[in-house]
Length: 106
Image 1 (tube, rainbow, N blue to C red):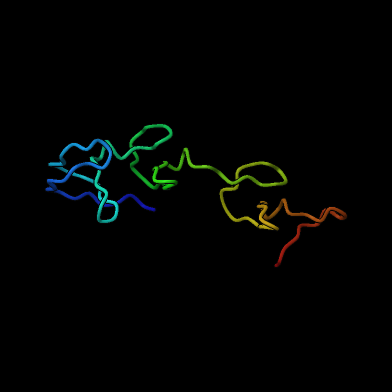
Image 2 (image 1 turned 135 degrees about the horizontal axis):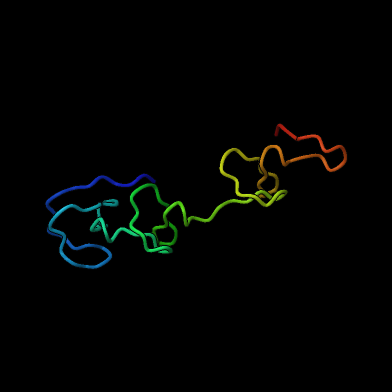
């Protein structure tokens, strides 16, 4: 999800440090507020200032987020992919084992 908008003027506590928020804060939903410096990646501990993933009530920056890997070449899949029986492939890596032609379609 994209980074939530900053808001001003809260007298509520930060979800992470539990200190009172008196200035700018981030709001996730209606019940989670953070000081901007407290909204950080649970893996690298750097403040999150862009998109992130939430996994098991933890926030992870995209640099630390788990990556999908192609079953054929083992490289990270960043764009389009094909999926066969739960396994992911780059479109050019999904090939016939007999003739090596690229497979397309459903």
